[in-house]
Amino acid sequence: MKIREMPYEERPRERMLLEGAQSLSLRELVAIVIGSGSRGRSAMDLAEAVVCSVNSARELGEASIERLVKVDGIGYAKAARLKAAIELGRRIARSPRKRGQMIREPGDVADLVMSEMRILDREHFKVILLDAKNAVISIETVSIGTLDSSIVHPREVLKPALEKSAASIILVHNHPTGEIEPSREDILVTRRFQQCGKLLGIEVLDHIIIGDGRYRSLKAGGYFEED
Image 1: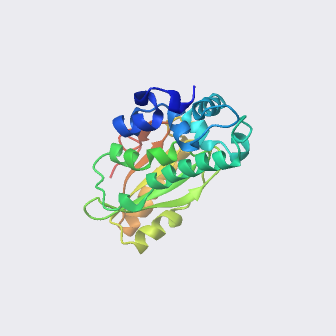
Image 2: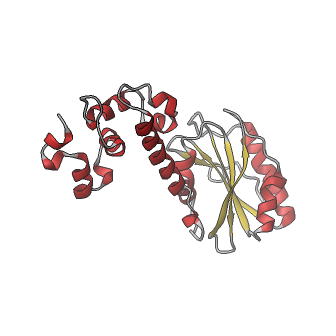
Image 3: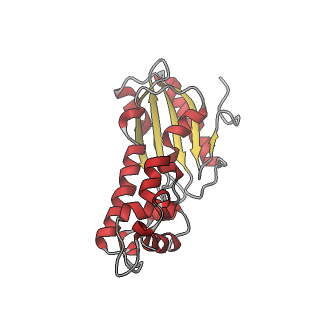
């Protein structure tokens, strides 16, 4: 059935206008983005084919244009629309609006970075710079590692903290596997940064590990050195 033949209240675009984008299924969102059908297949048919070609929204986000055009009916123009929509969402997720946000608990950190970091296929090490009131100054990416490890040196983290006069910092890195248990290296790195921060008068408030929709605070877990 073509979209224009569907009951008005069941059409994806009309449903989005009436109920909001959050009410739509992945298939309906994809149909809206690709916009039109192809060779006797409706936009909903093509969207169904795209969704069936991946296992999840996350996998769709990681799919290349070359993979998308392998779906029958999806040409380079439709694939480009999908990739543009996905990239737009990613940029919004890491937009500068985060500056000035207050950090009161580990969940606040997760809210800031989860949508971006949970889908990364490499380990990224970030530092959140805070002012004296625990408001975010900036979020800096200081290292991008391999599939299962990241090499980071204290100077790479503490340099932006000094340049931007941060009063304290929070360390953040993701585990591409989705697991959130800290490794021995994670614990050692945390304590090393604590020691270096003390020398420079910059407190390390926490180290957050980001998994797939989950997070772990090393401070809450008792992995920080006692003062």
